[in-house]
Image 1 (cartoon, rainbow, N blue to C red):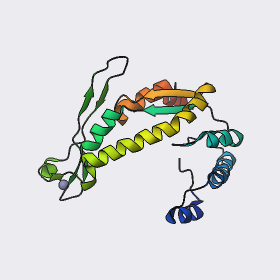
Image 2 (tube, rainbow, N blue to C red):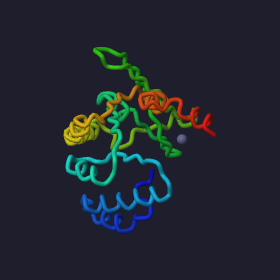
Image 3 (cartoon, helix red, strand yellow):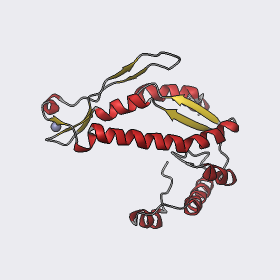
Length: 198
Ligand SMILES: [Zn+2]
């Protein structure tokens, strides 16, 4: 869902000036977008990566009914391995990933498998590591992840307390994760239900 479609100009101005968008502006835009959606007969919405703070979660209570919060989780070591596996073709500029993830399930943690995204054979000998993909910047990325994680924990607790938090450990890439996520949301037979109702 494109959350801010139709209201991009003032927001773009603020972002271009390097300022943070205030909660007031975010909720103003969000309410307008939700009202417009309701008027068009939309039956629901998904917010991606929002709310980020407990204060935002509390304000959101007065703006919309939140049914469920899904916490998508991926092990940090897998995330880093994927970061380190990124390659670029020096000729065509194509982006690939040579990391092949196969983590066995242990100590109650699920197994994770993510296939590499390999280039066509004519790009294979021209692969380079991008300048920003060094170990140093991966360390920086992991620090940023840690900070985001610390910041989001109170928000998780907020929704856990309301019984609305669904923890979901990503079992791999999109092909592995999507069916399992639908299953966890009891939506795995959604398309069948739709065609049966039609
Ligand atoms: Zn190429």
